[in-house]
Length: 133
Image (cartoon, rainbow, N blue to C red):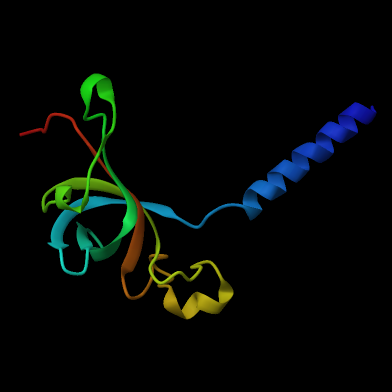
């Protein structure tokens, strides 16, 4: 009985600590419509409009399953070209927590994205597979 109570308590602690340690990033997918080499940003085109994403020096840029035997290939900013379809793991630009009640005026409630439309990329990834045409 004691073991069952201990196991239940540990399970609850793990459940609550996971939510507390969650980082507030999200995935965005789209086709690169513009690359600004001076500002180190890429612009993704989507049904909701344009989304500007800032690329930092420590942003991980990689091609998924592009190397020999399906290994990832790591790239750089120059590999991000208009027309490439990418998946970006991003956080709101400027370092504020988008889910903090103090920052509600900075977030568009309809999209959940910053009103200025700019995000910072943690990771940018593209798939290497044959194209449809």
